[in-house]
Image 1: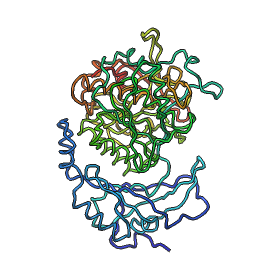
Image 2: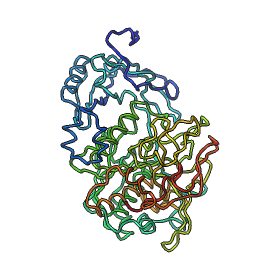
Image 3: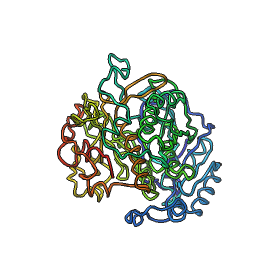
Image 4: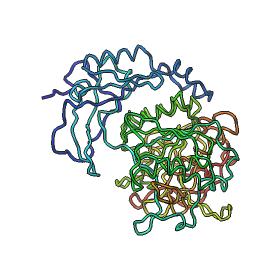
Length: 517
């Protein structure tokens, strides 16, 4: 029997690695000889605090030199791997990552963990662990995260399809719906096209069909944007049907492409695990070939579903984005104040709750002939509403000190408030898209992230420089950049708690609809 890691001399607990079991044990033992890949995240050469405070954008080369992983640390991990019969599959100093490949049994011995099969609530079987990861004492402070031992599903897409009696509604059946380029005009976005910019989109499933994109943009009389798929950790452009994640992928591409048609679009496909999700973000942030200046993310789940090491490493990746001048737009969630959890408490969605994410909330937009009649917080049923609230993990950032952010409605924690901005997300006033040959109308804060990404591409082109992390600029002059949304709430019956919109910043719509910067 495997002895307790606490009895193994020289091993210490990896801070933040505690993971709870999910689902129920599945029948059948895991194959100890199965080969898996694991991502090891390493410390930075130096703190980024001063650099972030200066708000100066630096090059990828300068970042790698000052803030990447130290080659000596990489060497120590390689020695550790070889001692445990693990091979090095790749390494990247800028991403502070080294990828190890080996047998499950060797990883169990290397990190003093026990892996087993579990059956999730969705019936799917995954490789999981519970408890902590252990590392050698000499690697304390060098290893800051280990991802891939557990491959349970991490996130869900934040889109909502307009339906009636369980059937998708076509464009003509939702008279209050819009094309994304029409919303850009209604909102008064800058009259630029995103030319010269690159928008990165993170996808954890699904895919796109070129024929659909050709047809969609032809119907809008817009040239098809340059679109490229990048594989991360074996993820791939794998379209299947309109009932699955294809709706998310096509929504993201079609909205971003319609708003910024002359920007190039790079879609990073990765497995839906904490490892795949994080690796996709670091790949996009540090992509020196495509160099996205904006990243759109429409996947996430409640903070309680992540380990501390995961939230810390995601947050550090978004810090890196800020240093490199990359704006990261992330959907705030589609399940109101509970964020889909059933424990009776309020929750916010991650990674949108990171202080370095531009968290995108949702509204319900009524407009005719290009004129807004009304716009309120999106809340069309008990569990279909914009996400928003107060983080239970990230403290209130400096830029929100004067924004009257409330404490958490569940715990009273004074945390990062979200969203920052909002846009149309109600599926009943949603976006006309084409998915696997089907005309559909889709909403959700999933649509707001690529909408804001398209806006940021326009702004970057207009200003001739990447905006990067816009929080300080936004919070210093919100009235100059946003139209306030003052009506509505995101209170769900599952928590019976939540937040209500009002003048100024609120935990439903942030500062309101961003249209310029």
